[in-house]
Length: 143
Image 1 (cartoon, one colour):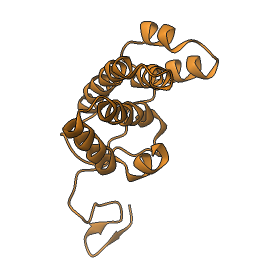
Image 2 (tube, one colour):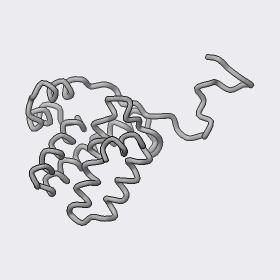
Image 3 (cartoon, helix red, strand yellow):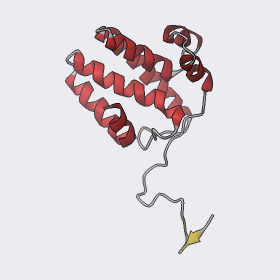
Image 4 (cartoon, rainbow, N blue to C red):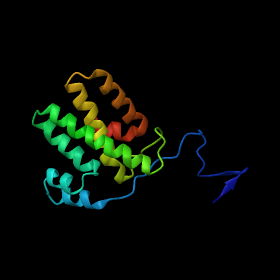
């Protein structure tokens, strides 16, 4: 590593935690991309935040906001479990640019959206801020 004045060029100058990159699990992503129903993907891969996020999106699109909320909350908690196993300490970047992180970020976005739809304003605000803090790119891409 190149060093200048005793500092690595990869050192976080702001002193915050390093970005968390979830391990890749291409199975669920590939099944969804091939057209497998998200309910079947979630049943086969229950730890996949991506499958739960897709279920949440589909439920929301058909107006089933409580169902969307439940799916999103499941994906969110599965994602928190995965983040913790990857060394995440409760805060810090979870980059959208790292594709395996997208399932968690999509579930977090879906949870915020569904919370707002059912009148859970505090949860909507908490989840929206969490998304922005975790990945400004995800917050922008997901709206």
